[in-house]
Length: 182
Image 1 (tube, rainbow, N blue to C red):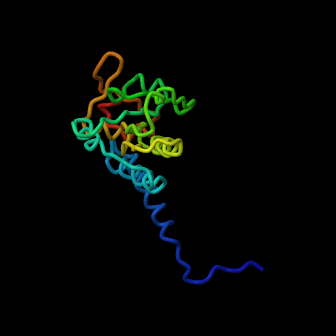
Image 2: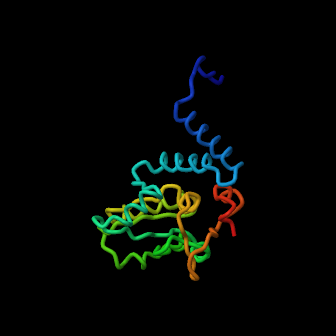
Image 3: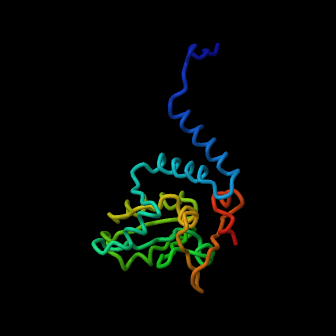
């Protein structure tokens, strides 16, 4: 005979947090460039990768302009076709399908790195991997390239400044303002 659950059993707080974040993500996908959807993704990334250092787009701009700090090397962790469409000026591309760290061999483990992807999920995972590989000053661009451009920061392609960013697919593209869709 199967045991029935004790009466009054409560779900763990983690369950409520998970479903709350999931609801925010789903609701966030309903709006164009939704700050709510982006916030939900950032919260999910923070929960999954709690030890990863994060830097906001505005903090990255300030850091890059600070003469008292060495500028970070930007690592674009997206497929090459997405990188070619647009990227943050000066970023080195590392393809997630075949991660080749050749572009990072010229840097020391103490070189500050800021990793990003489109919405901000894979970039956080890459930061964890780079930290495990011995890089000591690795940060994640919070919200990824989508937040970067949604907040008005520039991107480039081979021809110079552009506004188009690869949306990945229909659903992820909902986090990107329509002005940045190709």
